[in-house]
Image (tube, rainbow over all chains, first blue to last red; front, top):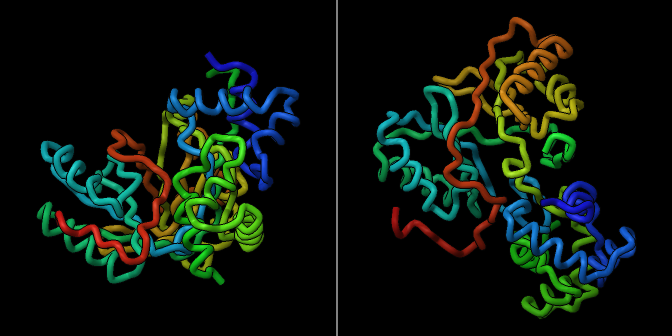
Length: 152
Length: 166
């Protein structure tokens, strides 16, 4: 059950998290609760898997290079191949989508050679081709979510 | 622009800030960096846009945003930028990118919509098509089914190679 404090932490601190020595105390002051209340509520949200972390969103291609990869995999093999691909630490956001290209994931690596080596290894290991769609331009990267708690 | 210490700091903080009274001091201890320097560098990285935003990263699926669709269009190259910016104005568009076309993939403009249900997302797509003059352009909507892996970008430190199992 989400308390008003949980809801406020989920909705109002997705950006501009305080860059100060005691950020949780600052949030507590803004909300009129104790620092301990904030720390406990965030721990609860984390334990209940409602937040993944408190941290930065780093735009692509700053710390390394990345690409969106699509593969067309026959349905019976999809789970097994997806599991193999998810095992690569360079892979994140591995999803099944409704299309002939039914497996979509992002590969991130420190440089272009490493990225290509991961794609080559995936093709070799799975026996299927990868289609790489690197980012050319980003118009909007934010991934903030306005929480609508009326229907949640 | 991004020096070695910035890089170390981002690599350290990308998996999350500790939930304790002085989280930046704790990050600093791991890196042998004073708390004040951690704060100063993070402030600068944010100003430079190397940190897009800093805060609570919610798990949207668990919070009711269960219909997740990638929508792709084939738009004329000279209109991509303008249309991308237009699409980004809609509150329900969470990401918008230009990517290259490929032999079996004619689409060059991508956006993501995270909605509470499929019908809502389809209505939002109609709204985008109508408002941004996209009606009639080749497009596709790829709803997600299973999520096999989901986590924030974790950049591998420069020297690691993980291809041992490949």
